[in-house]
Image 1 (cartoon, rainbow, N blue to C red):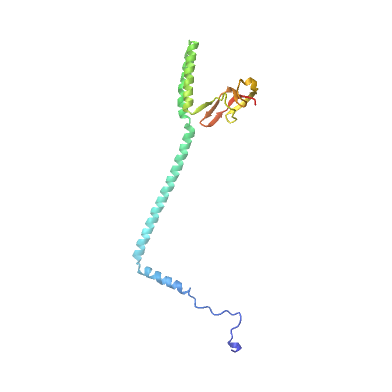
Image 2: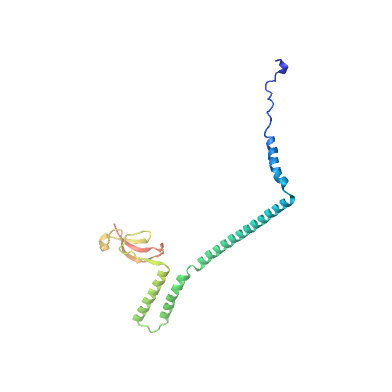
Length: 194
């Protein structure tokens, strides 16, 4: 082989026949019969069907958005009403208590026994209202001191506690109150010293 016949080094060889260029043509020829057989009327019918479906979906979307907004608004109104009228049933239970107290004040010539009887009746009404509102007393005499429910005001020596074990409530200076499981006011107590 002579020098002119040799290929120069570094010159790339001729690429093999490109098969990729032929593939799009094959794909185009595969799709062409489908498009070629479709008429303009068929394509217009398909387009109208697609537009109708898109319009229907858009209408459904707008309705869903409106329904979600209405649900959110109603929930906000319900929350506002719950805050505003949340104590309605408790207030209804307290109204008879106020009526009883007003009647007691209207009585001019009541005997001490009649006044006591009226006060006891009013207290029973009040306790019934508290029960209805899930308001319960915390009366821990003799129970172990619990800082979550009790507030210690003082400690007394174990000898003066009258047999109450150490770290137990000796006396209650002011009852505590609880709404359901939440402490409204802790009981003020005296505790036996350890």
